Image (cartoon, rainbow, N blue to C red; front, side, top):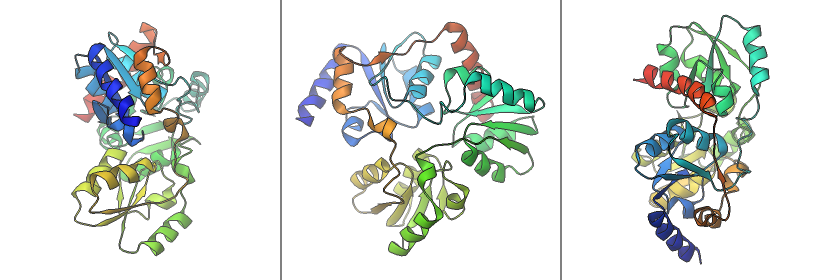
Length: 304
């Protein structure tokens, strides 16, 4: 039945001039029908380049907003309206304004995992892979980093010449992994390399053999001569890597590292979205879109 649904999806996206974006944390049956697979900003860039008039974002809401910010002329659909991101929703604009008032001489840097509304109040956005380079390239010496204090802590250690103000926020999925998980995993798999996402707690990233974005973790595992890996990010990556590289062994750092918001989208939801019976179109006021885009444009400028 899954194959029949996938075949129907492939036909419909041709008929409707649609492309499908799938974040790496989606299930493998969705990745198999996607035109592009990757991290949030990379997917938005691919959507910008495509000639398709409709874009379906199999991910969460802030990712779909990113696509709309960069491609306002395209119809952007989120298959499940309830697919949100707890980290992106931890701050609202009024809370950020209060933080900025408390730290008036700080430049506000937003992790890409934020809402479009929050981006309108920020000076520059960063991704987990570009953050260190971009913040090093900024003229500002004082950084108010939102919303992930774990990612912010990791960045601050890479850029010690700058002063950081962090807030208490982060990814509820990655924060579940602990030092005890690392000790258990290393004891069970002593020959495995530990690859973790910088959204993890400092006690976890400090013990890792490699720290990087989801895409960087996958590339590291693919290109490494090592045969065994402990994966410290969303557990779907263990499955994807195992399918792509069956000659290697991949272990989850924690069985609890599951993003339920990502998993709310199923292959059937993608079909229903294409059929027009489910899903939500992402709409942004033009003033919001343009103000949010400024922080993204600055990220691109500083990242070159």
